[in-house]
Length: 125
Image (cartoon, rainbow, N blue to C red; front, side, top):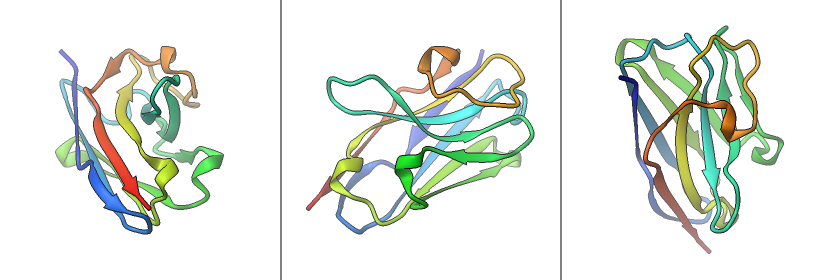
């Protein structure tokens, strides 16, 4: 059974940094798209950073180069380093994985089969 577990969220002042981790079990890195989403209150989940089955990273335009993906396949972990955080980054952040091999990772949350429980990021002014 595929399980995803996020960690690393917390409260930080604007301009600070956080590193989120997504540990996958019952899952092989690269077998499908693995993506970080975030959800603002009352809004749909939106894709933030994407890892496809070729090992390529892609980021949402709104990130503006502030976030960086990395991975440790030996630990089955995908990281999201978030720098220069802004109050508008405050959201619940989720890790998601698809069931299928993917050369392009979609932005829509309904394309993903597996989800973690989320980790809260709160950025104060």
